[in-house]
Length: 337
Image (cartoon, rainbow, N blue to C red; front, side):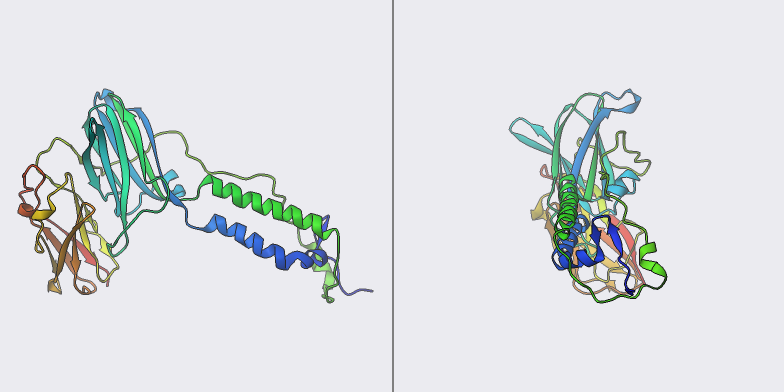
């Protein structure tokens, strides 16, 4: 009596026969599954609806999420994605505001055409990088009393990629089933005391594919908005990285701020931003201005466990009309031990 019991995966496929194609089929299956596990692309989408409370002016709300699951659960990303808002006018565009906040908005806007752009993303140390490939910007029209709600998802697997991977897997399985019926090979005897292999359940059939899509309804942003108005003449800080009072793990971090209006780069000096550590004292470094971000880049590592205070000089921040921010802006964050 044979000491090996045939292990059935499918009425047409056995371990004996599938082993003949395994070296060729398995790498293709792994490749198809890899398509589903790679990082997704950036997704920016907008829904326009009537604002609550009978408002006659338009407004924009921006929410940034790490992935599609977080977007469904309204779990916002950390404040490190630079989003800019523009209003289209005759002869060009009017800049309205930018922020690193994960949820923010602008109120009291006139009806018209608008554009929202994801300009940059900061890593844990404050280094600037370009956004992922994908929908980096979107345009839309707002009427009186309407609100645009923007969902920006940093990592979203495109539906087309899911379809390609799923179809590839199905095709490979069907090809394997057809081909293994045409031949067979002998495998070494494998002991199967008690018929354990035959007792294992069959693989469930692949009868459907579930796609995740956008669900209808608004975004429940709750409290904590960072709001800006385009009619304020002097510039002001709209967001700061790291966030006020936050705990960060990086040993060297570039403190960064955004402003409600474009500012003159020619007014920025090397000491327009200053960093003070509770253990390090005055931190040596340099002030840089790029992509609308004012940043202080320390020249060395900071000490673990210390509290960092960053100050922006109000007289060095001036808009294109010559209006200064005026008052200095300071915030603090802590380094992990």
